[in-house]
Amino acid sequence: MGAAGSSILGADGEWGETSLGDMPESCVAAVLLYLDPPEICQVARLNRAFRGAASADCVWAAKLPANYRYLAALAAAADDEGRGDGDANGKRFSLAATKKEIYARLCRPTLFDAGTKEFWILKNKGGLCISISSKAMTITGIDDRRYWSHLATEESRFHSVAYLQQIWWLEVDGELEFCFPDGAYSVFFHLHLGRPYRRMGRRLCGTEHVHGWDVTPTRFQLTTSDGQQATSEYYLHLYEQGGWKLYHVGDFVVSDSDEPIKLKFSMMQIDCTHTKGGLCVDSVFIYPKGYKPEKANIVCE
Image (tube, rainbow, N blue to C red):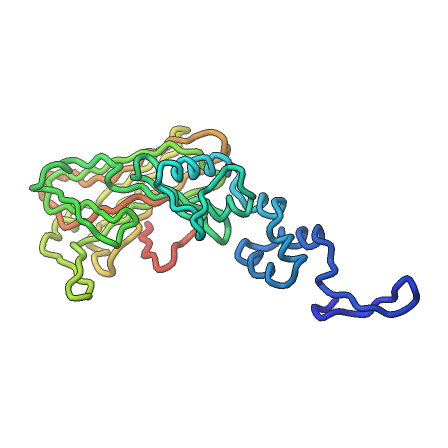
């Protein structure tokens, strides 16, 4: 049947016209189940039947993560505490919202754990992503201004990064306990060699403190509460050019979306025969395995 319409023989024996607008909404909804969320929003513009089906709960329930109720409760709590900004019209999020509204809210970042962690789902596929600020991690010597400082920057989701000037023993540890939708995930440290700054509208990078990363590799580790482990090592000086990098730590698999899993992750360079410095530590990112953020520089073994 063409989009413009086609002729059929009516009950009175006369030819009539039909079009996409005559399709039952339930049939349209069955078709929309095979589309990704952005495509569903696009076809909703075709006519009234598609517009109605594109808002149906049965369509969006299939696009939501399996544990969307858990995620939605976190989002609602964040909004109640003033860490959410409502929708485009300023409407506050409610657990009684439609499935489409829930999906739209979960696509917007939600801060939790006192604003040091953040989660969101991908608009195209609904995969869960998490970012953990350096302020949520335990960093050796972080309170000693001789070694570390906090830099305000718009290049971080959290508007602040930890900057290492110089230290003998580098150790950064973090952890997260969360209910992930079932699937495979990858963990990355978001790092930058050199101190990025802006002058007269230009982005520049100070490298006067960068040293010590070519002697011993930096080790990254990941462990989970159900016994999964991963380790990777990189000579950071090999990736000095090009700005921020996502250093792949390892992967883990979640089989039960209703059970919280505890992750522990770390980066270490503890060869005390030399100092090292000039490193920005922004955050740890957790993405669905295989996902590559736009414009991201990923470093893998």
